[in-house]
Image (tube, rainbow, N blue to C red; front, side, top):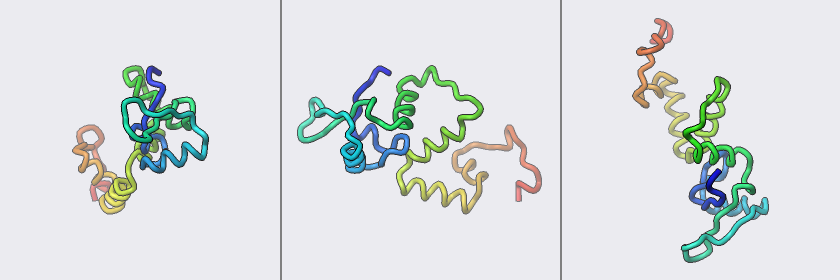
Length: 128
């Protein structure tokens, strides 16, 4: 990984980390993460070293940094979905879950402009 230090804004919501700057700083303090004052920024802005972060966050940051070499296996889509879900804000999570509860997966796919019929035709039962 090329980058070793990450700001709280870069870490917010990544891999199950808190979604707020305050939450990141509190977790970092509780878990004694290696930190340094952020260069070129006034105030108490900190950035945290990659080695101090939880494994899930470290893994996702690595994938983001090395996106061109990432090739998911058949078992990883659930992990990708979970990681994506954890990057959503609480409000966004509620909206996605609400949409799925109201309109089902087909409604979510439609909202994302993904047309299942193109590749996977629905049976008559699924259309209802």
